[in-house]
Amino acid sequence: MINPKHYIYRVYWIEEDSEYVGLCAEFPSLSHLENSMEVALAGITARVSNIVEDMEKSGEEPPAPISTRRYSGRFQVHTSPDLHRALTMQAAEKNMSLNRYITDKLARSK
View 1 (cartoon, rainbow, N blue to C red):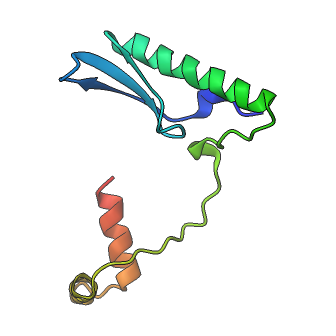
View 2 (cartoon, rainbow, N blue to C red):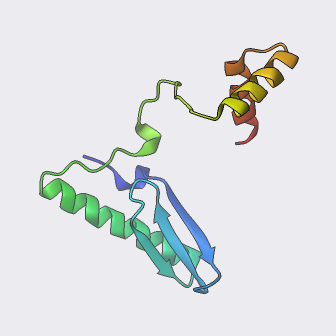
């Protein structure tokens, strides 16, 4: 049984609508608009809870919360040959492997 409270929720101000929108990363097609941040968060949380409950009742598997998924620490990135060359040169200038150089760059961008 999935606990919907473990999903990733965000609330943003939407200038064009003059409202806050509540979103859930695991259910990207869902949103909830409200006049306050707190109500937008409560709205999207309730919507996701209802959907998870409906999915479980019908035998569907809701998505696992991103925060509880297991990660290997490996992912593959495809880029242009020119960018690959430039990054390799930058890594060499710092006396680092390309992998370590990219990992450090990603860690600094968090």
